[in-house]
Length: 131
Image 1 (tube, rainbow, N blue to C red):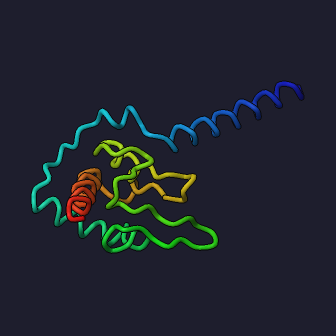
Image 2: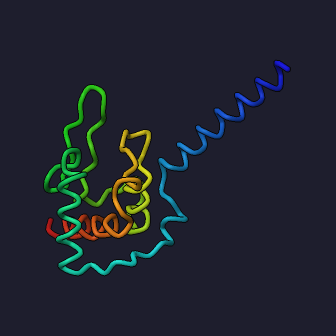
């Protein structure tokens, strides 16, 4: 009985560690997903509104990152060339929708509609182009 319980606990811990490692790296499956929302001025404007409401607190109003705190690491700069979680539209969408637990970025998929997440992706892309 004790060995069975130990195996279950070890298996559970390994599953959690594996999922965190997978989330913390580029996401090949998400990379295959194409953005279904064209980057029109309307999409970018909507994305800016959603970004300002939900994202700017951590990432800054211009997407240049946040300062962090004693309990939270700084939010990444979204205007630079370094994207540790993947740089395709699909990967950016997945990070917004599913969050990044090891960076304390919470998932937004239950609060922001998919279409609006795609609009945010388009807006973030427009920030990088303004550098």
